[in-house]
Amino acid sequence: MNSFNSFNTLFPIICLLLFVFHVPCEAQLSSTFYDRACPNASAIIRTSILRAISRERRMAASLIRLHFHDCFVQGCDASILLDQTDTIQSEKTAFPNVNSVRGYDVIEAAKREVERVCPGVVSCADIVTLAARDASVAVGGPSWNVRLGRRDSTTASRSQANTDLPSPSAGLDALISAFVNKGLSARDMVALSGAHTLGQAQCFLFRGRIYSNGTDIDAGFASTRRRQCPQNGGDGNLAALDLVTPNSFDNNYFKNLMQRKGLLQSDQVLFSGGSTDSIVSEYSRNPRIFASDFANAMIKMGEIPAAQQNGIVRRVCSAIN
Ligand code: HEM
Ligand SMILES: *[C@@H]1O[C@H](CO)[C@@H](O)[C@H](O)[C@H]1NC(C)=O
Ligand SMILES: *[C@@H]1O[C@H](CO)[C@@H](O)[C@H](O)[C@H]1NC(C)=O
Image (cartoon, rainbow, N blue to C red; front, side, top):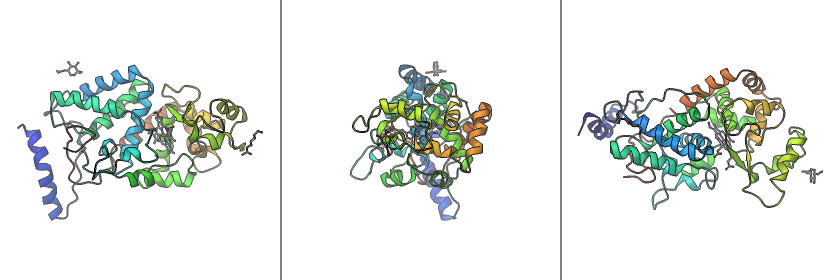
């Protein structure tokens, strides 16, 4: 047993001692966390993630979203990856996730490759976090330094997934408070929503908006979108969240919003006469400020502390050991 593995074994005991002395036990994150026990972990994960994205470019979007949906429920603890059992209410079947979140298999494949080299060392939560960063870089987005040492939960919360993940029909106040509840600012929320420069959404999630004949949607845009999203049926038909460049990371998302071409209601409310208009306008004019704010907000989101004090390192991401 090397020094890292003995730390893994001792961690719950150390936590218990700290608890006895009323010291909160949050896993200390560090950029050198696996340097001794698994020095090649980040490279193995990156290679595996890049392989998946080169098979399907949309996977970059899906992995960034998977990380968001993990961190907003019990903190970044890979709780979203746990399958349903007698004791686990899987988050995979929560409304914001079911038939929607993708990439579980990609994370599981990266995990298998790391397990082959250093079994029992690297947490699934860290793999999800690294995957989101690697995905951003792969599609031309910013890079950032990921601090490591997250623990995997032994629990999941479908109910928290249903209450804490924001709805695409949410108004601005609801969006801001969903993020403030997780320690993120309104500005972080706008920057992170810029992830909608990538990926796809299903018709049933934006149908109300494109058939609303509202004043906050460009008429030409609405009519184009209606062609692939009929009033009845076609619920799962996909449309790009960024109509201009759905496969590359850029600030077109914010330019779209200023032209009233946001796909989701929750996109357009960021620029509809409210307090975040000035941030959208700033990001639309300055792609570098957007990229740098996005990177910093991703780090912040990726460090939302796990609710569970005595997390583990799972052997397989979909089940507890
Ligand atoms: C502000 C509140 C947010 C709401 C209401 C929201 C909602 C949604 C919805 C409804 C979809 C489409 C899902 C589907 O059609 O199955 C989506 C897709 C996506 N979201 Fe968000 N989202 C939000 C914030 C974020 C954040 C913070 C990130 C990451 C930093 C993110 C990243 C993505 C990505 C990349 C996709 C495309 C996924 C793919 O193509 O697989 N979203 N979002
Ligand atoms: C680390 O992993 C990468 C990707 O799998 C591989 O190409 C490289 O040879 C590995 N390096 C070492 C020292 O094992
Ligand atoms: C919007 O306009 C279209 C076509 O003019 C009409 O069919 C539809 O019922 C209207 N929707 C609403 C919500 O008023």
